[in-house]
Image (cartoon, rainbow, N blue to C red; front, top):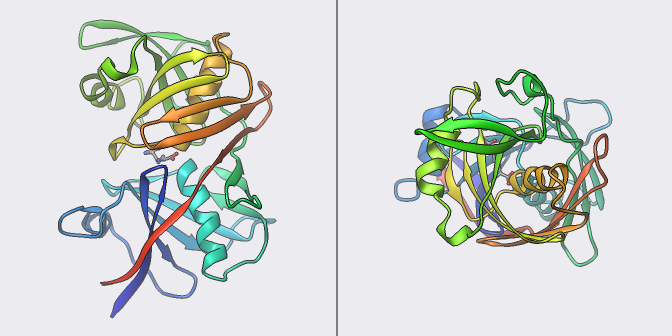
Amino acid sequence: MKLRFTKMQGLGNDFVVFDAIRQRVELTPEIIRHYADRRFGIGCDQLLLVEPPRLPGTDFHYRIFNADGSEVEQCGNGARCFARFVRDQGLTDKDEIPVGTAAGRIRLHVEPDGQVRVDMGCPELQPERIPFLAEAEADTYAIEVADRALTIGAISMGNPHAVLIVDDLDRAPVAELGPLLASHPRFPQRVNVGFMQILSPNQVRLRVYERGAGETLACGTGACAAVVSGQLRGHLSSPTRVSLPGGDLVIEWAGPAHSVWMTGPATPVFQGEIER
Ligand SMILES: N[C@@H](CCC[C@H](N)C(=O)O)C(=O)O
């Protein structure tokens, strides 16, 4: 028996997407790691499952798994690919699609030019809800990593993010500090680590070392978290263009208690079948 899948990408952050409404998809961490493997499997940063709705007022449920097999709460580039997938597969003809994830509800808007605009919900800043071990909520936190004193922003977009500001993104120690921060004991569920260079109040450059996937070409929730952190620190104003190695996203945020909006592309790459 074979399983049908679609390979998709959002700014080079790539996904294997399964329709789990019209076919039975059984996954274990080991199977996910196999499908995600770029040599022995299909290859992806994350695997996405399209399921029937679970939350009232939603049309679908959306599950996300990192390449290491871990299930996560949220994925921004994946959300845009999800919207494109359910329309391309004839699962909906709506332009506005309410979807449930492990982090709650998100709303996907397919624009006339094919870009997808996503209401990613409100950022969570309380340390215990990120989760991050800290005495009290703050815009920045001091943290020690490999004998270095760093300053980070800590934010949840449904999934946890640490954001560092750097002077020169090309020389940022992503490969060195990314894995150390991603598994830092103050982040009990690990964390995605963003390195942001500020070019102007409305433009930044960003690289993200993702929990469970390593450095990717783009991270949608990472872009949202970076802009929230930049605004909280007084460096940015809305909207902000975020230039990632794989391309640009536009992020809008009107401040605390408001949703973060993300706009960007979603592209199918190919369809295939794989042995179950
Ligand atoms: N690439 C994603 C985020 C995927 C999940 C993340 N690695 C995590 O573990 O939280 C995005 O575009 O947001």
